[in-house]
Amino acid sequence: MQVDEATVRRIARLARIRVSDEEAKALEKELSGILDWVRQLDEVDTSSVEPMTRVTPMTLKKRPDVVTDGGIADDILANAPARENHFFVVPKVVE
Amino acid sequence: MAEPLPLGVPPPLSPPHKGEGNHACAARHLGTTIVTDLTKLTLAEARAGLRAKQFSSTELTQAFLAAIEAGNASLNAYVLPTPEHALAQAKASEARLAKGEARPLEGLPLGIKDLYCTKGVRTTACSNVLDGFTPTYESTVTQNLWDAGAVMLGKLNCDEFAMGSSNETSCFGPVANPWRRKGSNVALVPGGSSGGSSAAVAANLCLAATATDTGGSIRQPAAITGTVGIKPTYGRCSRYGIVAFASSLDQAGPIARTVRDAAIMLTHMASADAKDSTSVDAPVPDYEAAVGQGIKGLKVGVPREYRIDGMPREIEDLWQQGIAWLKAAGATVHDVSLPHTKYALPAYYIVAPAECSSNLARYDGVRYGLRKKGRDLIDTYEATRAAGFGAEVRRRVLIGTYVLSAGYYDAYYIKAQRVRTLIARDFEEAFGKVDVLLTPTTPGPAFGIGEVSGDPIQMYLNDVFTVTVNMAGLPGISVPAGLSSEATPLGLQLIGRPFDEATLFRSAQVIEDAAGRFPVPERWWA
Image (cartoon, rainbow over all chains, first blue to last red; front, side, top):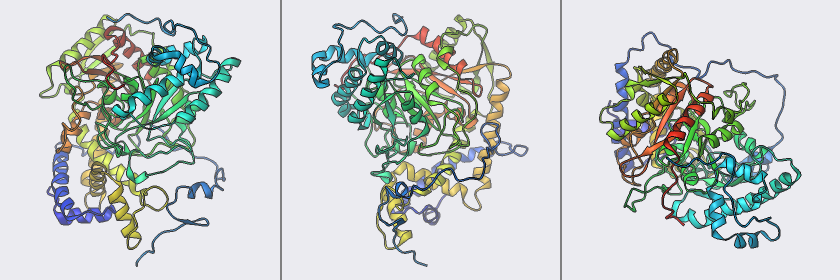
């Protein structure tokens, strides 16, 4: 399973990480190496096995649908690189 | 065999010192002998010493702060010492101890892995992408420790976002293992990702440390620094406030000098937590009580598939020695099979990157941490994440993105999760026959900083004996068991049934009693 440069660029776009041309070349090799190595899982017959969906046997806890937290807008903005009143300020989104 | 220290009784100190007056003067009057003695105490000994008023809470904290100031530049175990915070906590502990209102960990100085959110104290996960992040909330595990009266000495170095087996991916630079090869000055890795934790405990820069384990990041560093590390059952400790790497694999746990110390730490780290719906509602036993219970009649399993091709002779010998020790203490030893063992590592390197690609999507420069301004929002995301993530993190996020992407999800992620079910099933079947499993912790001793570079898979192989345990959600402990031919530490791993940490502690104690303790022979860093 070779990962080519176009695939590296597609994945990088999906992951929102900018990748330079030299980095893309190096990543082709590295990612291909890892993906080739994990292909040994194809040796395992999993036709009658369910994927694991919970690590320990438990049912998801529920709680009453009431407000128990909140009103901490200042805390939430405390580490913001740019803020205005109770908003995070970001560069504009280009359509 | 090392002379056993009477547990809970500190070594005599002279002269006895009341700790009155200016604390800086007290530190000078104490002199270096007392400072070194205090930092060599185990957590249990320090706990007893404080209650017996052999030394004050402030003196104990001062001793560690002095050791950190003297030694951290060479080791780089701490990324952020917090001396003022520590002394304030020590002072509060002093008052409580004086009034006879000591909580279980009153006045005991600990190091905290920089993956735990500590309120008002910078937390970075050792990544540039969280540059300057100061949490406005506390992780549940650390809150439990402060509620028990513990003191925070500072934040400890780790691999970036807990991804690594050597602490070499940290944005703060690598950590030096306090252990060195016999006759060599080469800097060795302390393991990873909890390398700062393991180095600090081994170098007596704290009594014990918090750490996390996703594929071996507590057990492997403990094994190669001669310390004890336990990853409890998935769900035993709350993950609230711990920077997430792989949510179905991450667990919090302690690294400490002795089995007893690790048991004390885990008792106070663990709790049910409404803020972590994967944490279990089971009460936390007093793990310290399990420590001396022995293992008569215990059935120990030795999984044959852990005997891998090309395994060094000394690892096999250590394993056999461990088997002999457990037999001598009254256990019976049985051959068991875990047929899917060899697929755990490749399956892990699909599941963990997949989960991390999702967990690390939040680091986009909008709400916290680093922001690199771009032309527009998407450009800002791409520039921020490129600048903020190191090479290993980027590698894993990209692998994860790929295996979760349309057209590949079934072939990779679902396939790996099916293999994971088989791995868990192997353990379930084995635990029908035996009570605990014994394996080596690592395929070798500590390697040199920079020695394993280039091929990521070479680095991943360090976790070959440990990832199986995370994939199955089971508890696993590493206990020091011997020295390599290079005179560096090696550990043995015990794996238990879900929520049977008590059996791990009493089995590990047997190994510790037989093997002795492994203090670092030469204090070269200060």
